[in-house]
View 1: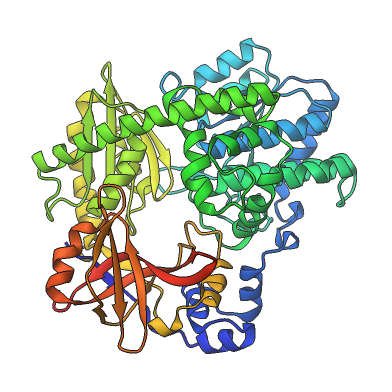
View 2: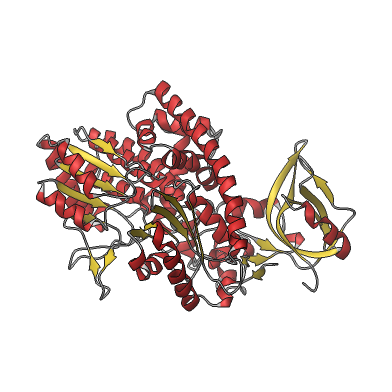
Length: 584
C-alpha cells in the first residue's frame, strides 16, 4: 500500500529564522518541524555547546547519591554496579566504574544474563550479591520497578542506589510506587524539589550526570580536578552511545551529549572504545548518529542478545588493548550470528502473521509466539514487524513453559500502559511507551493476545494504522546545491525526535531511461527534470519500480539531497526514498 505523504504547511517562523540565522528556508522549516522556532534556541540547536548541559545542581538526587558513594569509598565498602544488558546499561556501568575508580573506589560490576537471569534486579540477584559481600549496589538503567528486591536489600543491610529512566510502577489508583532506596531518575524529585529539566535522559545519561556530581563532590568545587575533567570528556562519548542506542529524543541536552560525544569518540583514551571503532570500520573518521545506531550499537547489543554482556563492560573498563581487541572480535562474531538468526525469525514472523490473519485491517496489534525463537533477538524482529505492518508488535520466545517477549509500538499506543492493562496475563513487564519487555506463562499467550487486541481496538483508530511518510518540506531542483547539503548536515546528530530531514519534489519528468544498477541490479538510477533543471537520483533497492516509472514518465519523489564526488567534481544528487505517481 502506498504511504500517505504528510507535509506540514510552511511555519510562520520560517522566514524569520532563515533571515536571522542566514540559512536556507528549507533548513529553517526543518527546525520549525522539530519545535525549534526561536532564533536563540535555533542557534543552540545548530551549534550545541557543552556549557548548555544542565549542572548536577539541577538534579539534586545525583548530589545525594554522590555523597553516599564517596562515603562508601572512604569506608572501604564493597560497591557493586548492577546494569542492564543493552548498550545503555553497558555504557552507563562503564561510566560509573571509571568514575568511582578515579575517586578511590574498587567497584565490581554485575550484568544479568538475558536468558538465565532476565531483565532488572531480582530477588535472586540481591541474595547472590549479598552472599558475595556486597555492601552497596548501584543500579544502572534498571531498578525503578524493583519494589520487593529493594526491600530485601534493606533487610540484608545493603545500601541500594537506583539510577534509571524507565517508567515506575503505579498502583490501582495510578499512584506512583517507588522502591525503598535512593532513586536517581530524571522524572522523579523529592517533595519541594523541581523535576530535572530533561526528562528524556537515557540510562547512560543519568549515569553521566551522577559521575559529574561525584567528580564535583570529590573535587570540593563545581570546577572539577583535571583528572576528572579529562574523564568526563571521555565519558560523554560513552553516554552518547547509550543515548543514541536507546532511541531517546535527540533534542535539548541529549543533543548536546551526543554531538560532543560523537566528536570525542574517535580520540577516546579507552582501549575498548578504540577496538570497537576499529572492528566496526569507523576508526579515525568523523562519526554520525548512524554509526552508533547501525555499527557500534548493534555490536554491543549483540553480546547481550547472544551471549553475556558482562564481557562488553569488561572491554570498556578493565581490558588492556590486546584483550579489548579480542573482545571486540567476539562482539563482531556474535553480531554476525545475530543477523543470520534475525533473518530466519523475520521470515517465520511474516508467515505466521499471514497465516493467523494478523495482517488484516481489523486486527490492530500483532502477538506472535514460538518455541524456536531466541529471546535475545525477538525485540529486533518486533521492531521490524511494527514498522512493516504499522501496528504494535509483540514477539515471544517460548521455552520450558515460560515466554520471554519484546514489544515495539507505534504512535498513540504507549506500551507500558497497554501491558499494565493486560498485566493479569503476565508474570512481569516493564519498559517505555515505544519499547517494552515481558515474561509470560506459555498457557497465557492466547488470552494475552486477545486482551492486547482488545486494548488496541479501543486505543487505535484506522487512521493510526495507515502507513505514513513524514516529509519536512517541498523543494524544487533549483534549491539543491552543496550549501543546502552542508546546512542540513548541521542538524546532525539524527535520531529519535530529530530524524534525518526528508524532502519532496513537485511533479517531475523522467529524462531518458531509468537504469538498474548495483550488485544484482537491485538499485534504480534516474534523471529527473522540472523543465528548468535536472538532477540525478539513486533509489536503493527499488529496481522493481522501473516498469511503473517507464509507464508514467512523471512522478514525485521523497528524497534526501547528497553530494556526489567524481573526478574532483561535486554535484548534488537525490537519494530517493519513495516514488509517487500521478493518480495514485
